[in-house]
Image 1 (cartoon, rainbow, N blue to C red):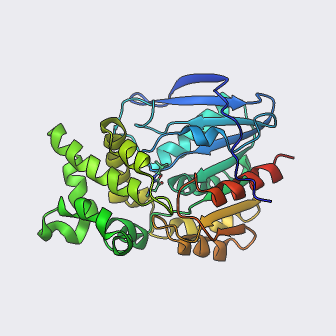
Image 2 (cartoon, helix red, strand yellow):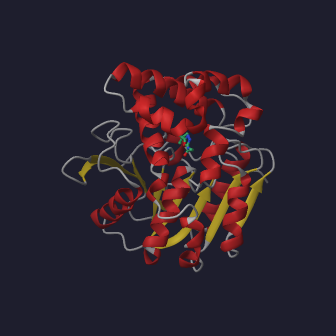
Length: 316
Ligand code: STX
């Protein structure tokens, strides 16, 4: 039976700003049952912020669902800030959230960049993770960045890619990340915004199997685009703040005892299925669920089906 129906809207039980450094405060919220099984939800991007679908993938009667906007995005402040904003800062923030809520062990749930951060967190603090549910595996390896931002998805989406590509003069196109980074950190905010909207619209147009014009528009809105594009590009320019290109694969032995599910769409144009395949090779205990009729987005029916199947299975 296909269970592709999300749980009903469940507004947060509590919301707060947690100060995590001199500079940054992050928005944290708790949904569902405060006495339920704890789960931490990790959003994508980086820089994407939480979205309402993320509150609807767990049974609110059985789970205590914690969500947070990572540094510089969503309702976290300062908006679009790149200073003190690295993978390892975010791993440390998750520990601060866990301690704040007095949680000993929690389920870690993340899609896309959320899978990247979920893996980094679990490899750093494996004893804190009851299960891993990961979707649309992304590990910031060189070929993955090349695929989506330079040469790969552009072959399938030449019509959407063109505006993003044409913004960069031909003599800078051999390194699109560096070229966009220069513009996204320009002293002139108008230069930043122009680049941010093109970057975000490109990404927003290639996430689901079928087009979603409403998402494209939302991604290109000023407030969303500036944080999303600046933070993503900053993380990619710094290679995810990892010591080696395959850091997350190399350290997979650290999480082999954690029960895990990997959900990935066959036609994911943002983070190719090969990523999930590579992860499964070094983490054979994980349950890889390939969704035959889906792209990258969490909203795809087959992806929702597998995710809800997994959260039900682990609800106890
Ligand atoms: N970025 C992929 C990613 O994590 C390379 C991502 N893309 N869009 C999103 O996440 C949201 C829909 C969550 C904003």
